[in-house]
Image (cartoon, rainbow, N blue to C red):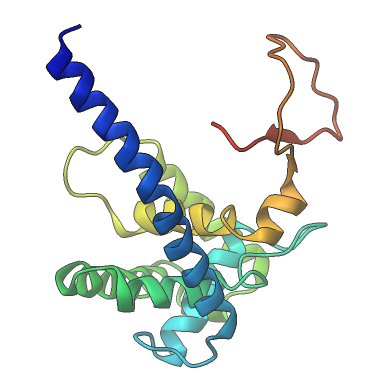
Length: 191
């Protein structure tokens, strides 16, 4: 390795070390903002109810909280307000509306008006059609929505503590471990 390459790599390491607290602060402030937010900024009440219904069908309440229990809908609203560009925001809202229109044409009812078993059946059909394909550029709304829902859910405190065995200081590497029926996935600070 040449000296120039070493200097460049060291500078990247230093930049990473300096930026890590900043990134952590931004993520924590978003979390605090979600906890303190009661009013919707981008979504209307009808859109919020639809997001809750879809998200709760993807991640329902069991022994662990549902998606709406951890405020996935509020976090999405915050992302639409502060993170997504206007074009992406409009496509997301159009996709949300189209999802409901498609549901109405197939089932005869809006998604939020379906009973739980019908919501699950409809979403299972949509999931099978969309999630099993690979996409290069344009990704369908549901694909984005599901990934966003799961990501938001597992970045919340309840999502991590209720569903994962959080181990901040993992031990030594053990290649093959038997997983019992009541065991959870173990996750530490490093992926």
